[in-house]
Length: 67
Image (tube, rainbow, N blue to C red; front, side, top):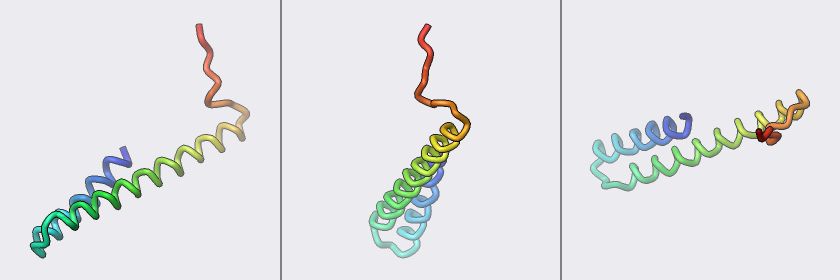
């Protein structure tokens, strides 16, 4: 969810600035790339936190029981 939000917010800002300054698709593309980078960063931070928390509690998040 955060990835999509970051992509839409930064892409939207780029789109707005492109329309305001009439500079083509460059700011939209730049904003979208920045949004993707922020989204991936948030994903990695949350994944590391989940791994750290699961190790601290003694639970293995990769341990799956197969029936």
